[in-house]
Image (cartoon, rainbow, N blue to C red):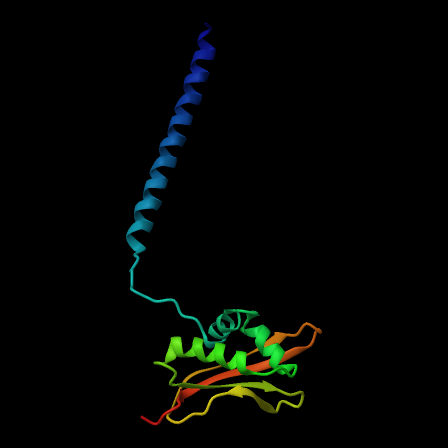
Amino acid sequence: MPKKGFFMGLFTDIIGWFILFLGVVLWAIVFFISNTTVSYQIKEQSAYLNNEGILLNYLTSPTEEGNIADLIIQVYGGEEPTKLVNELDYILNQVYGKSGDICWKLWYYQENNDKELLVGTECGKKTNFFDAETIIPTPEGDKIKIKLNVPGYKNDD
């Protein structure tokens, strides 16, 4: 083996080891400096859904004939509201009330932005548990803007 090739290989090996050493040192410095400045605090938090998100959950609640949104479209189209009243009353009392005491109103908006009562129950004591509105599509391609309001209890007790 010629001496000239030996020393050239030794020189490149030393440069390679030096670059590797500098890389490890720089990585360690960055890791330890950033590790001491970044801190995490774990808090107990609950997920938050806004009222419109909750309303969408109510609308997609299953019923015997589809979901609540389907029943709303049927009542909007002129059918008897009894099924919708029973289903919404059951769901809302499970969430907000105790044995049928919750009152609620379901409104729809006309083209001139006047709201009309679609269905609802009578109210007594008002506390305003829930109030949200959204737009639901109809099978004909129209859109209905609805508003669900849970103002309180049926009785004044």
